[in-house]
Image (cartoon, rainbow, N blue to C red):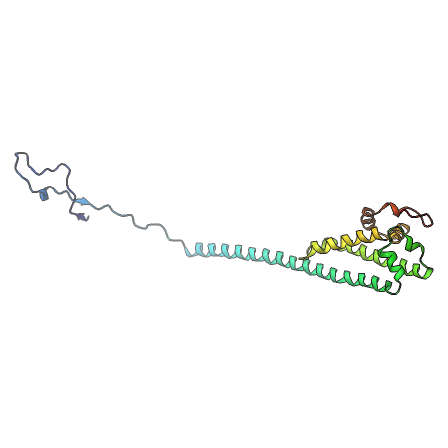
Length: 214
């Protein structure tokens, strides 16, 4: 045991029982230094350390695997969207090129809400116009098939908004296009017809030969 000097006994006084002065040093009580606990915890065995490290490594590998799989799927979806969009725009360009040499047929498709131009088309122009309607309807149908896929593109929302507006504009602007789709409903998918129905106007129903509404 170690002792230290400097702790005074609270019962000690500077005078003895007979009034004699007593040296304070004679009444210093030794203080015992408490025994400090030693580190008696058992050391982890090497096997336990290795097992713990193995669990950590397995967890890290699992997290890495999940991230790699998720990242791979995201990249694949984005690539599929880009491929689908890359195929969509050339189809639309082909439709417009087919109408480039027929200005009346072109006007009937883009600026003829009540069918005035459509009714005045020659047989040749009407044949070109109907071919363009068939091709454009196929483009719209293809777009609707890949629309959910386009959402995975970084600019997917903007592209979808643009093409939805394109379908709406065409249906509203062209009496001839609406008439063609109605006359050939059997060849179109229910998905396309459901979308087409959203943009039908009152001028869709009249048959050819009736006076268009003003």
